[in-house]
Length: 329
Image 1: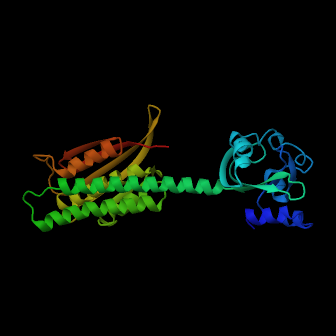
Image 2: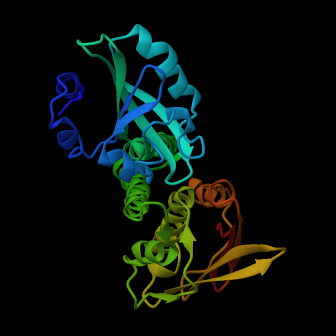
Image 3: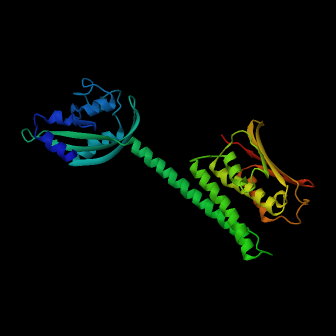
């Protein structure tokens, strides 16, 4: 039953009109010319938790503790309705003492009685609080998705532009770029699967699976939930460490091992994450003559992405890396 159906029913003054109106779930009021309540349906009483004796015969704006004394509703009843035959979907947001903050769509229709030409106003309320909250959440999700896509494309563009081409075949460039791209894609998938955050142990497991448990010794620390913006940088760091270990480090030789552990500590009132990477039984390690994109990517990811720091030590026994990053609440 819509507003026009209600209008025709009430205008006819049918004996069953009140009974039919009471079957509606939507709150409904009928006001006289002075704004006083002539009648209300059961939906109104139940929705706003008020009684008939406290409603009928009183001004709409005096109901309850003045909960209906809303500027938008006063304007609707006092200015808009007298000049309009019907108003549909006028949005009113207010904090009602009995039910809390609510957003209502108010529809109104003038009722002119043929016998005495008197005028009353039929008002129908639709609670759209949950719908508006859902719409707002969808808007936030859409904005977050756009933001992530923009960041993802920027990362991919940077990887394509900065992956070294000098002295490489097309296949070597492709494999290097696609490896990093795959790390980014998997990190994004993991972040989205977790809705808002991702667990560090899941990223470690994902990055280290190519080495296998016989070549990679992981000492798991406490559970650390990474914020969405931290997931891709952390995944890129782990990917670079594993890739370099396969190409130049411990994993490039039979019997070579990598050790990974992490811990958290309170320092200067802040919770910090410490990650340690250590290689052994690999080829002799010496500092590179120039900094390649891999080491630059690790540094940028740690400093700018994680807002932390990284230290690389090229020791005779193997590469050692120490990463610190804040643990955000």
